[in-house]
Amino acid sequence: MNQPRLKEFYQKNVSKDLMSKFKFKNVHQIPKLEKIVINIGLTEAKENIKVLDTAVAELAAITGQKPLVTRAKKSISNFKLREGMPIGAKVTLRNFIMFEFLDRLINVAIPRIRDFRGIEPRGFDGQGNFNLGLTEQYIFPEINVEKSDKPRGMNITIVTNAKKDEHAKALLEALGVPFRKRETK
Image (cartoon, rainbow, N blue to C red; front, side):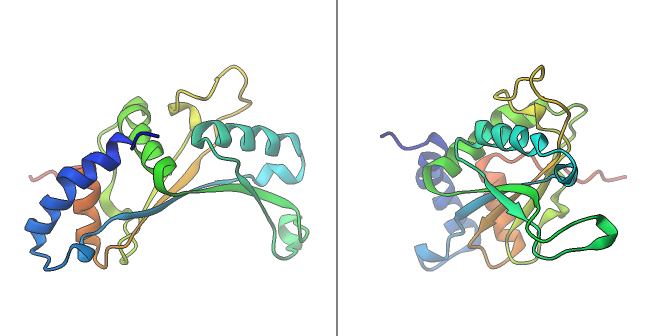
């Protein structure tokens, strides 16, 4: 099995650039991707269970991996929610599948976003992880718009082993994530 081209690019170019840019003394200090978690919240699944099947099938098509159906941990009467009801789906990607997904996200899906001006860099959490919210799943070419019932948003969390947000941002920029540039007035 061939290595994903983004992983090859990371090993040949990005790791050396980050090592010299931040003056790391050890190769283990270089930030790297650990996993990517994709979540879809399905509040309407408590009334219509077919929504869950559609969302799980779409998420499986996007990621190439079977999603885990998440269930409510406790009952909340104000939301008409019972313990154990399905309320979402999530997928955790690692290794080859993670690099393939990130490559498709950066080079195929993100350019298909309407009126795209760059990803907002405020999605970092202070520990080197980046959260990206998408408003619809139609930006992925694997989704057939005619078979899908409605647009669904998703949260994509890119987990790195970087200790600082600036190291994680440099890693993602080097991999090709198009962050929004600050406008100077």
